[in-house]
Length: 227
Image (cartoon, rainbow, N blue to C red; front, side, top):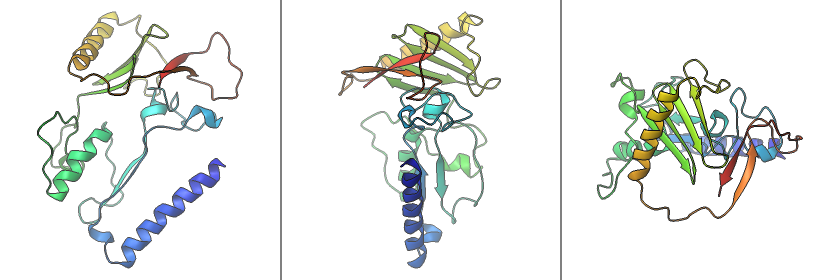
C-alpha cells in the first residue's frame, strides 16, 4: 500500500512537470516539493527515516527533517544544494518576494526570503534559532545545539547536532548550563506566542525508536504526542 502511494505521488508530480513543459512554462515556473513531516511510526517500517531517529509526531530528526526541492531553471542552478537549516515558514516570504507581492505587516512573520541564500548572494544563514511546539512538547535548535522539552514524560533531551546529527547521545546531564540557556529561549519564544486557537484534547504515547507493531519495553524512549 505504501509503495503504491509513493508511486502514485511520483506519477502525479511527473504529470504536473510534463504539463508545464508542453505549455512552454517550465523554464520560469517555480515548483516546490516538500512534506509536512517525516515518515509515520504507524506505517510499521523501521527504516523509513534512517539514519534519523523518530517519526511524524516526534521532534527528533526523523519527524522534522523533510525533503525540500525547489525547481526554477531561470533562477536556481539545477542540481545545486543548500545545507543550512530552513523552515516551512520561509516559503511565504520567499514566494511573495518572487511574485512581487507584499508580505502582511499586521502580524509577525517568522520566515525569511530564502532566495539570497540559495543563490549565494547572502553568505550567512537564514536562521540562528528555530522553534517547534505541539502543546507541552517543544523544541529549540540554536546554532549546533538542540533541546527537546516535554511535560509528559517530564524530560529534557539535549543534543549537539554538529557532533551527533542523528541524536543518539543525549548530553543534558553534561551541559546543565546549556539546558538552562535553551530553556530560556523557549520561554522567551512562548511569551511572544498568541493563545492556541485549537488546544490539544488527547495525547498518545509514541515510541521514538520502534515503529507501531514492534513489541515495546520499559526501557524504550517515548514522547506523548498532544493532538
